[in-house]
Amino acid sequence: MKEKITSRVLESCLENLRQYALDGKVADYIPALSKQNPEDLAVSIYYLDGDCIHAGKVEKCFTLQSISKVIALALALIDNGEEFVFGKVGMEPSGDPFHSIYRLEQNEPSRPLNPMINAGALAVSNMIKGSTPDERVGRLLSFIHEMTGDQSIEVNQEVALSEFKSAFLNRSLLYYLKQDGVIIGSVEETLDVYTKQCSIDVNVQQLSKIGALFANEGKNLQSGRQIIPKHFARICKTFMVTCGMYDASGSFAIKVGIPAKSGVSGGVVASLNSFGGIAVYGPSLDEKGNSVVGLKLLEVLSNRYDLSIF
Image (cartoon, rainbow, N blue to C red; front, side, top):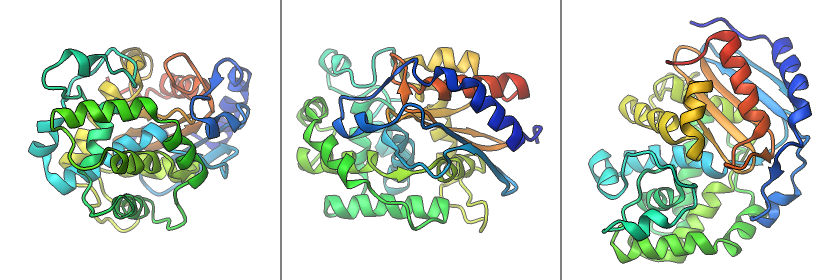
């Protein structure tokens, strides 16, 4: 196991990087997210032996946003199997922005390149089993409760409604996908599932525990129960490496080298085998949509403690 990082080191790193909190911009295309304070910063590390350390505003909740794509992918794989999922969604990285419609226009049929861009994530949400949107979201929440052992995690209804009302581009993506049979059923119902999935509230401690479960090959750290089959956990971590940081995934792999997934609320989760899960929250985003402080903090920790998988 790699050397453990102490709480004092985390506190020092977070304080040293606080100067970058205003360098980017809080997401405002989803109105509810524009209310976030860019100076609310937090970090947590959940080790595989159950130890958890943290610094900053650890109790501050934020929505998963695109981090939920990794969790939804794991559930869709459990529900449908690998062949079905990747019959509809590809496995290749994209150099385009996460919300781009370009590839769907260019490709026939309109098959998303991977599950981490919005088009692919919408297709994955459509695969989660359930007879109603609420049942599908409920199953995803129950899945997260199993992963964390925390029943308090729930959907932020204010953010979900704000996101649903402003999701014009995602609606367009869904109609492209429906035209080519990538999704079935109602566009509005799938969008309802997706926006609520993205609006699940967590804090960094809860998120670092999710990262640790992936690092633990899909097993719950306390019970040892296999929540995600080992092979599916590996698939999810591979996508985190190749596609997890939007179209900055290549540079992130070189500079940091840890499987990670970001979200436009400012959250980042990282998962490192034989180490654990790391979660960072910093709402100010760079031009790619990644947390400015989150990326810098992970780079500092990776370089100082030799955490890169490469």
